Image (tube, rainbow, N blue to C red):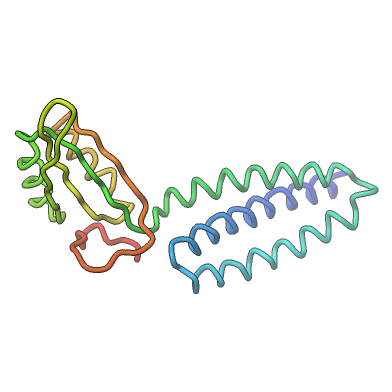
Length: 178
């Protein structure tokens, strides 16, 4: 009985690790980290081969193995998404639409913090607006967003993931990952 419980626990936790690795690997491929993704793929498949073969070979006698395997998959997707969010790989484009009167102050403050900011003038529904464009590492996006809201609580902020960027200025202090 204890051996079965131990085996089910191993299947469950190995499945979480394997699927978490797979989730991060897929995101790394999409972000352009091919070499690191290939390295992770090796371990992902290595774990999968041993765990899947163990489950399949004993499925008829212990159908609970299949259920635990499936639950481990679902938990692995969740844990993988949390892990990827924590790693925050890649770059983002932050566009902040601010009031014309506060936009230049917001841009100046962000520049004081070391961020490169491009300011464009735009037409809003009722009044002219400033559009601030900031390229940043994903890890720094919350800092930038909070600074913008401190200075202009009514700003509209749009954040887009980037797959590639060439040139420009990204704050070195926020350059944690690629």
